[in-house]
Length: 548
Image (cartoon, rainbow, N blue to C red; front, side):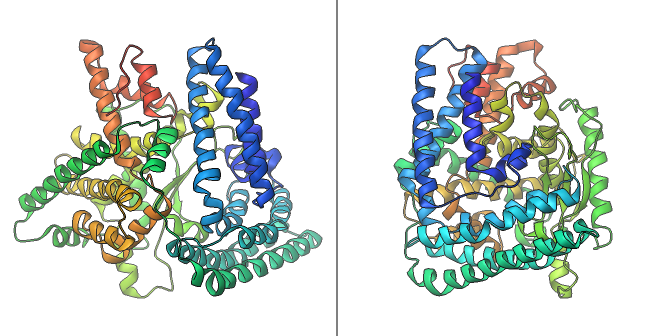
């Protein structure tokens, strides 16, 4: 099994050098992805051969428990990738994966100091030289995509032009130091990459967009297959939807009731706005975020929520300009095999200096104290940063390198609700209100994703649902629904949370008087971000495996 695992990841890293860099395997740093049709055909051949091998290993039936779990996870990964490449053919239908790759491939080299800056600049130059071919492949491969995906690709391409012209160029000048030859090599490669991005953006807007009449819906059968292969969830689609709808209605009623109890004269939207009147200034944003961490860590210790395996804190800093489009606040951690650049960053996006005053205030309102605390629970403690701190303890290479949304995002979303239930916030109703607001957003994703891909919903219908059921502003509601067009199974936040709650209840029943919340959480996070069905198998060996 060890030989197969090594072969699987070697092939994956050769196919996706950017992922290898992020994971901490730096022998691939000079390469960039080859997305030509020929390369896609070769990847399908490699995956098909790997599938034959893993099926034979599983058929033989002499694997250890850990090996059997790894084999099942990798079998699902292979099947899902083949579904994407052969059946859904997203490489022919979604230009986003081409448009976004140049920025991410270079970003992963410049944001972490795993090698001296000059050495990393040489790697950047090497990857930049591959950008024109990558974008040529987009023009050759992509035909008749959904219009929503082309619109996003245009925005990504234009944003990447600014990233390379400004952020990368400034970083490169500093990284080159007195090496004018290296700086000249960078400038030539960067100029060529920018030209190719400009040409790609023009092609997307003038040629592809008028011919973007494709359908984003993948259909019920493929939706179910993706859930099975990625998340190991085999619940029939009608029952899955019913579970999501029931959970949304429960959270919706609780949200409305919480608002009424706090101030019956205000609607929930008006109440949220009044809460956000108390928000940080641009100058206090980062200090305020840092304060949330220490109080949350103390609460976790006092209430014995989960064992914190390290006293090292994440670096809480302003998000660099080239990363601010990823979100308002997010955790950026190194891969499990990174041995040099091991620092983790909790990024908070400040308002831009050139924004008008109203836009700055609206942005800062998002970081009102109750919401900021819930965000920190999700991103840092006991959410994603705790998962990172446990990563080097994950027992196998597969579990260090493979993670699924229902576990990673499910755990962070579960942490929000669990912490409130354990008394976080000292009874402050605004904390519960903020947590429910976050839950409704994830509940709406659950339902909209299914409806978009299996019931013929338009993005506009999805946006209306986000407005009405999750109290989202129109612009944000549309963005959320459009995300569902290219991320069909973004139900994994609520799906994972519900699976974890069921696992916890079954674990508690099995343990009886020996049960403790901290022991359950410790056991859960140390297994890795693998499908929760596999975590059940490890924590409850005699369980029937039902995750919902």
